[in-house]
Length: 430
Length: 201
Image (tube, rainbow over the protein chains, first blue to last red):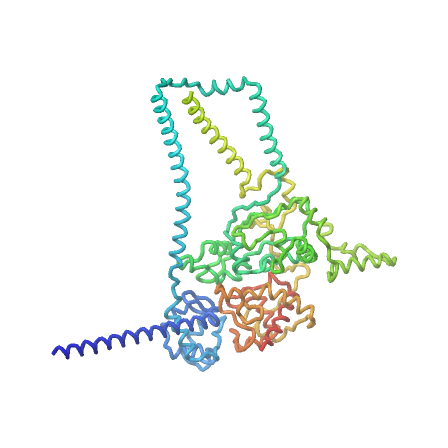
């Protein structure tokens, strides 16, 4: 009897092991399918589809469970042909967005399509530990601030207590030595200071100190008048240059396209933001909601992110606060500096080849979470660079024209102001 | 005597602390990064004429930068005749040809604008694997070559100049319009460079 029960137990055990193993393997392959599917999905589908939101195409986690796999295989493989074949369900599905048609993907194998469907079913793998880490960090920073305050308070208390203790000990020593303790007379504070001011040397010293302090403060104040270096106003939207120009490596010119063509570097209009933020909504870091800062762009445009429609009547411009502000009497042209003078500026300011020429004056913008004024923008600052920078006239259309004009003048040919750019509006009207 | 010295020390500490506090406060107020600091003759900074980005009470919508009145065009504005529809796309693809000659200079310009405005997503080689795609900020970008299909039918590598121009003009799916960032000439330079990338095997 005992043998039988042993055998049964063994069989049971191995059966259990087998099932457990097979479950593991199956779930493992499923995970692999989903990972493979995620890769293809990101490559081919996300330009029109999202898992949980309607975009150009419908939200896949809502629509996919309502369709059969056979239908989906045909549909994804070649939707236009499927619709043309007159299939009722396909024709119905094509009505989701009359302006766009589902792209045909004849290159995808049925296995690949199945792995995409597996990914759609499973969804985005959850990133564990990320949130917890952020919370810990926040706690630490809060803790460290409270810690500093506590340390200061404790040290004050310790100082006071130590002072008292020293006083007590001194009294004890004096008592032991048999000296009689005379309670000191308390001289009133005002009377004490009044007495000091009768001392001529002290008065002289006091006035000297006062003059030096006020004088140096005044001198510093005058030098810094009208110099806005380090000015970092609070902007209506917390736009981070560190994220956009640093992490995302977007070229300055993408948004400030005016800097290379005109006097103004130009603040990008919101349609430029929407080139990316129609899709990028940072939902991962905001519990599935649109980031409040990105929502501000949508509010300014009257854009409804769910319906993907604009309401012109709700438009309200974003009132950015100007950081770099030259006095109105000083003329500065961006394009002249970043296009014509690019090589000279790079050389003078010692920029690395991978740094945009803009960094010469605006500093390491790709590390600024909030933008601030890096250079003083004073007249002295302009002039010092204009004295030192070396002009490179080679392969520079701007100087070729000037040299041509000079040659003409040398030869005594007729030359007009118009030939020297005298018809450009900005020469007179700026 | 000893006691009196200690008492003086105590008041001394109070004075020193007070002095240090005033110095700290006055120094920190000088370096307030949220303010422009002391300014002399502020009105010389402020423009008399309106800057394009300034608020303006003279217009109903409060902006200085106004859109042109209906049925008018700014000087030098090139009108784009094709509508943002499927028909418009096909017509543009059929009728439009690149007006610029295929030169080294134009290609170089096109490459520059492509690198700035397109490569963050489309990749330097047009393989759909730009930096933003690699860090998964922006996905679903098709390659210009290989077996990539266009969502408007046909293969990406077979798109005509007109179709590419039309897409830069209006955007498509998740891609926005880049018309405000690129002038018509610059758009054609980009088209020229994209057509070079289409030929990559």
